[in-house]
Length: 279
Image (cartoon, rainbow, N blue to C red; front, side, top):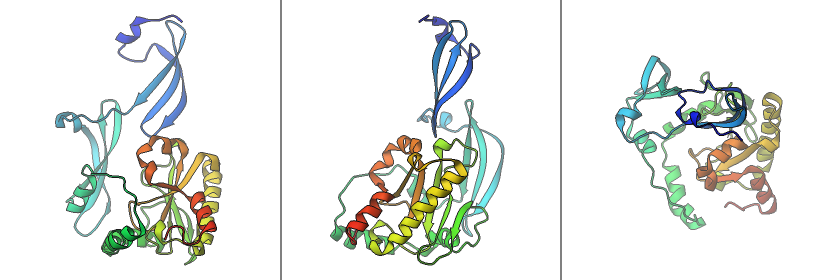
């Protein structure tokens, strides 16, 4: 190999050509390129840098204009725009005014891993779930009723009250982005809070979600089942049963989520073996 010390002093990538993407993830991309002066085939890796502690460096330059996405309630609205951080554009969200609930949600969490027993679920988790205000899940009700969802992208809507669901684009993924960051969400019409509510009685619903979701993902996006992780979270982000369809590369990039991920095929197997497996 011909080593070239001038690479270390380069101001840009003008000495490279024939870029070819090897792999692309939500926050990084790996490419091959030819270094023209030496003829070396080189690996080029772009990734988002972590944000600094210095507020002056965290707050990026804002360009363009903010648009109101949709009213979240009578008292607050979400505005969306784009801004620049170095050479990388970022999507900018501003919620104003912000509630204490959102402040708590986006503050650094104190996370611990525990084993939830049936007794702990009945005495601690379940009462907490039942105390969640209905207003917190109004947006879910709109989706399962197929009402006021013009700002959502619904892929498949099945109105059956027992085995129906809405398969939709997850807000973290935009059409046109790399398929390696593909993420869809399936929300059931039946009102289950979480994995804990499922028994063998619900196998027809779960099998339908798995089958239809995989068929749609293959037909529209060309992703075979071997490329898509289908899983639930426990504990979930919101307490209405939903299933994630995520490209396996994105799952790899979200290793911190793995303790919460429960494979839907595994759930189906467990319930087929023991009806009250998750009770």
